Length: 294
Image 1 (cartoon, rainbow, N blue to C red):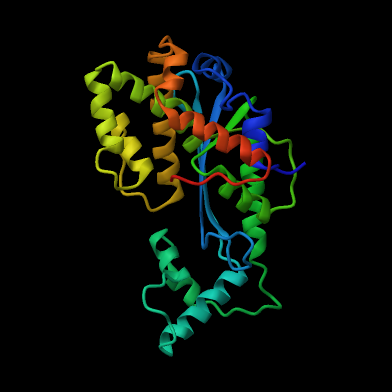
Image 2: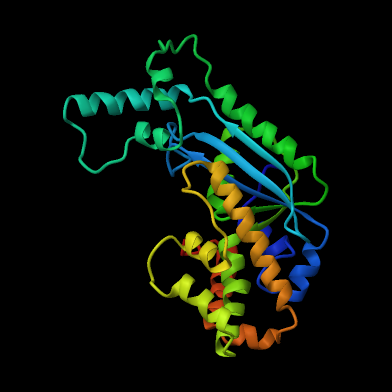
């Protein structure tokens, strides 16, 4: 089968859902390989024909130690639909029909590091061009790389969205692995632990909490990285993002290991949002979406 619905995997079948204790989660992760991945695209809606994958990046780490084992990175050739979209947007700008404030596909790709001059010089003939194969082959290579690891666990910040893009790009099917969604994992286990330690007066937990929630502003992932002492350069590519996310995951697991003996009931009840998030996740299994906080 192809990659099935993420939340069916992560909640119903996975060993990392909200019904597990922290100790059980850490035990289930023992000796596993975590595939922390990220993608870049030309748009947010995978159902649109001009939305394509542009980059796939992943870092394989040991769950026990956080040590990097291997990495994967593919920059994908732009397909015909994307190139046509760029031409349409360029024409709209030239004729002043472009709505001020909109971000064009060209601008998105330039941020991602594409040299658009290479594409501007190409003559596109729809009867001769075959740009789609590169996207499909990149995903096939990624799938093959994942399958080279025994008992791999997929880790992503927004797994539902990213897996939808992977599914669109290739007809290749393979058994769905366990999936660990970082935003849900953080809301259910990591954040309640931090809040519990804050209530107990741990100074470093107060500092972590201030970095994560103090300003009430900024990117949640960046704030989490700051709280965990993880640093990184400005993120413009999926490779940089995957590296940052792998370091966040490794630091988060190290933090949970350090405090795994904290009373589980206390951690659960000191953060009411954890119970609320659990109910939201359970409703998602019944077809209702989870509101995103990231």
